[in-house]
Length: 309
Image 1 (tube, rainbow, N blue to C red):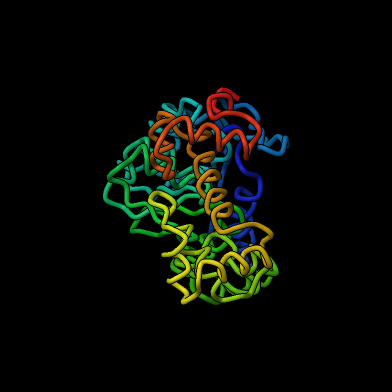
Image 2: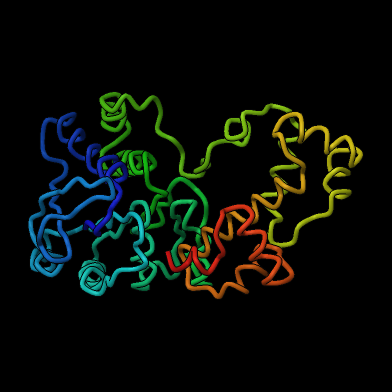
């Protein structure tokens, strides 16, 4: 089920393991079709158009043949009307079919109420916005989640790991291993592995005390810790911590902390309808004016302009 502006890498990572499983087994383990909202070609976020078999409404007519529906999302998924897709998903669910999502497709499942009581995940950039709209949703940050007949993943190449895990469950490890080899995918990652690159790789820094403090900052942006508390967490003085940040990152701990908070705020502004003041408080700012000034200094435009854009 392709949503306009879907992620091409998540789509291909999900569908290629099915094709290769058929090849490895030398028989059709899987048959699949592509569907869009209006039955016309669907355009990915990279501009590539994909031909489909028909509309979401037409997919419902397949009845027993549609035993699994997978939603492939992408950018700006929360700005579209998904009622036709949600109706197809609910009908598939009522018939006992499995429901899945790759990338931001999790958003559609959540809006349809199909993830209530299930564990789920979504791309790390969309976690905060999804959680803000669905308080009761059990949303994690794993690569993928398979919970009974619901399966969701973070998108990108994580879709391949999720599909390979589903192939293992349905047809055994040997078939899945053959598929992974064809994909030049050296190992099938576990569901609980991290979505984002390790801090060491992301920052290009190996100093353990610096990595510990940055990790602490990323966990406490809503209620920022003081410089003294950060320094004491790694048994350093404030001056030593300052020197460490300046040497490896070229900025002070306070500026790096502020950067983390502002980048999180930008995700919320772009992907949620939360009031700007609520976002400011969520990211550890005590006033709207301080938040706005800091945002302009960092991104070059105020939060209100960011949201309009």
